[in-house]
Length: 375
Image 1 (cartoon, one colour):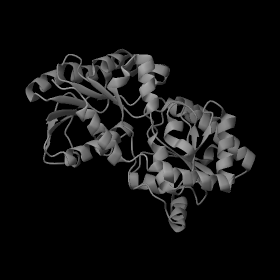
Image 2 (image 1 turned 90 degrees about the vertical axis):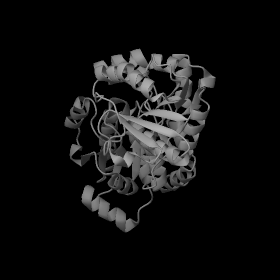
Image 3 (image 1 turned 180 degrees about the horizontal axis):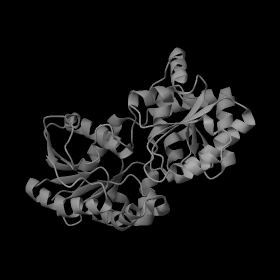
Image 4 (image 1 turned 120 degrees about the vertical axis):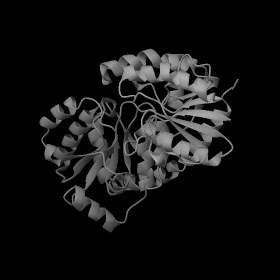
């Protein structure tokens, strides 16, 4: 079988959530299935670390997809022409974008449709593109994969996708996430938080991550507990940072908030394993990879009680109302001060993590490929 793959998100040192899914699943699939050919289609010069095996053939297709207008050109004009030349049996798109006029059977991985529920969270041109084209992608795709039962139900309810057409392919977590010794944790705290205990958030600093309410809850936590705790944010500001800055300016304890920006994965793993808890109180998630990373690190989790997070976190997280600053603050106090609760969450997290591995993700995605009807 000849499989063409949209790999435009495989960019060295710039992998986001969908990029990690793409990298980790394709690495395993291409190595495990040497009998098939994989055409990796990049929108810029590729890095050799993403050419996982001898059966991967890289192709560069201009222009670089840095704007919705260029997305349209790349997928709806340039991609169909390339596919005519390659003549693949299947087009696999890990970010859900597909060429609408190509006759090639397609498998679209639509991770979630957060933009359908909260369109105002996105820049205007991105919002318009997603709202117009993703219903068309979902309808056109020969088969769809998504990352949780929640997202599958969401696609069925709001895009009226056929239940039988959708496969659930859960995410996994890297093996670099693991517990750290007490001495190792002390070294990390000295380096990043002046030796003080800290909570941590990992992810893009976008509106649906609910960061202004998290900051307000941290301020309330500090006021009630009189603790010396810090709050560390790891991730890039992908859209507007205005509301976060406004909230920071109004905080009593803003000096205890630390933004690292994008840092190496090894450092993220050390920081997470050294934290008091992961705070992940998004009001919308298709999956939530940081939960599994925390479980692997032996760290308790405070999570929002909406969308996919209870499905992914199971009994390994303490759930709070993401729209209530009071609820988030109370969750922080409980997970910090209740030792029995901490131990219970860590134990349940260790059990929950085994359900989500990249090996299982790759197997599920391959099954979805095999289940896609070909001509």
